[in-house]
Length: 325
Image (cartoon, rainbow, N blue to C red; front, side, top):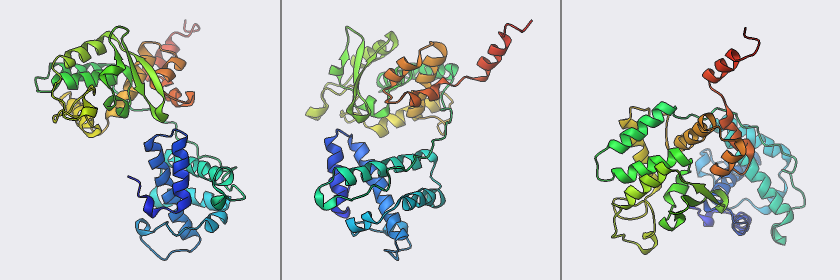
């Protein structure tokens, strides 16, 4: 929740402007958080506070005149501060710098006259390169084990929980996408599902037979007495007959992982998304562009993290070398 009363007016104006660009509520919340951290740093950098506890530094009094004094060297100092103070990962630093660039571009070109700044100190700031790490995922055997455990469980919500696991592993859905599914989003004739992804972008996911079977079996036992009018069309319901929440889904996944004997510290709902993408690329020979569309990635570079190969593939490639005679 954004506490706008603690923000300077120009920051709230930026958040409002971002909302008109159809940015998601989560993106706007991240903008606010990133800029709050940045403005707190600026107060330290410009000796505008004596507060030693970083969390207690307020930003309401950071004037637009102070913003006009910020130089590119201050932004570079901020990246160093993130590393030394918070040991921030490169991805975190990259996101914050991206936010700062968007913010200063707005102040320089789009802001109301009273907030307009003459120069953009972030214009030529380079975004820190992200670490290219292979995403953690379940193996094919572990994925089958997880599905087997979830399907054979005899509990009150086992049809629901099995459908959740099945959709994660077969479709590569984000957690936010799964909890937002409405029954009307599913075309039971065409085997398709409409989801709203990041940036409120809609895409169509094609459901295979395993998904359709799991959904149908759940719908046959899905509670009918839904409490709230806005939840009546929600696909997945909680124990209270309301739209299922993120934490409940995370609990379901953790519970099923534990029952399958898999490490719940290593795997999560997002790792199931990684698993779906990796298995489709490695075993179904899905091309990278198709995978990008299925996962709802804006940039192909994001999808490329799934094009890694395992040691068996490397060994097999060497064995199949035509000079191996």
